[in-house]
Amino acid sequence: MTIDPNAQTITEARQLLSDLGFDRERTNERSALVLLALLELGPGDDWSNAANPMLGTRAIMDWISEQFDVQYAPNTREAVRRFTLHQFADALLIEQNPDQPDRPVNSPKWCYQVHANALKVVRAFGSSEYATLLLDHLIAVPGLKAQYDAAREMHRIPVNLPSGQPLTLSPGGQNVLIKQMVEDFCGYYTPGGEVLYVGDADAKWAVFEEAALAALGVTVDQHGKMPDLVVYLPAKNWLVLLEAASSHGPVDAKRHRELSELFQHSTAGLVYVSCFPSRVEMRKYLAEIAWETEVWCADNPTHLIHFNGERFLGPYESKP
Image (cartoon, rainbow, N blue to C red):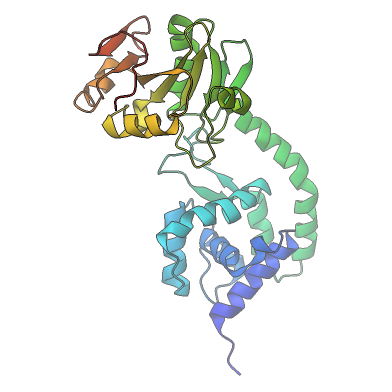
């Protein structure tokens, strides 16, 4: 009877993942194929030849398709990230962005690589040394995890909320601008304001004062496309909705409509602000910025640009 090399290699990968202590979801066929892609091991390849290239999610899925003729729909990439790669990283089987640890979470260059320590175990799979190397690795993982967690924490962006409460955001990307919005914009334009929401690409709800928003008539779920920063001004009964335009663009007509609908039951007046890192960046979007909104540039933090309307930095009544 001829053994199918595809099935044999996948079975071995599933056994290896089980030996490493992964649960049922992380030892299924999908997870096994993800591991094989990260090791560049095709059907029938010897485990001693395992490699550890840096691969993004798309490259992983392309490799699986080419080597094992298993196709995953493009919309399954998020499942691969959330239900396989994240757990592989948590267990230190793989590391994320070894070439640039502070890479922004939403970067298209985000990549994964099998840890050098784990690679030694993988290459010994099926050999007489395997059991010893596996045990040594499992014993070492808690200490290694503490080291990697500390290293990742060093790259996070510290932010001081107006209340004085400290906060950290994931590194890079628009979070550099969000820090400036929280500390500089709020300092100049919303003194006495309460930060009710701060978004973060790594943890969407970095700050989420659900009860305070609900008291203002605002109820959102985790599928609602929140602005990047929401500040309440009790003295004026305003909700200031700020978008970090460095990555996703400004409050244009479409976004204005989305936010109006999301906050339609607010008992506070709504103020819309597009925030840019600089006026140079803002110029790229001038034709898109919605009227009756405000623009703030972090390189000129003491000034606002008003996009025509009846008042300056204030809410407008909803139009029928």
